[in-house]
Length: 96
Image (tube, rainbow, N blue to C red; front, side, top):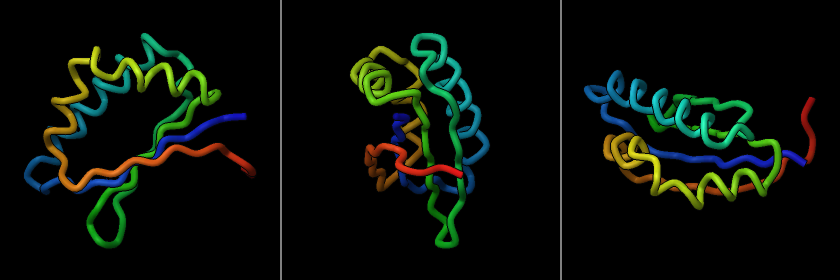
């Protein structure tokens, strides 16, 4: 069963372009080392915060990637442009 990590955070408008570039680099690095990452979706919500979902083939692959997150130099650089970040893990129950 596929797994998802859902992040929610704020990014200052002045930092958005740089954040998107760093996020793109982070995603590429994660996929290179952990090919179980199948897709990512970033949504700007009505309140100006962002919902960022990372979809994985399974929970084991997701867990392995996030256990290694400290080895990805892009991770702290990317997240340094966010504030009030939260994350939750889940499993896809139904997808149409």
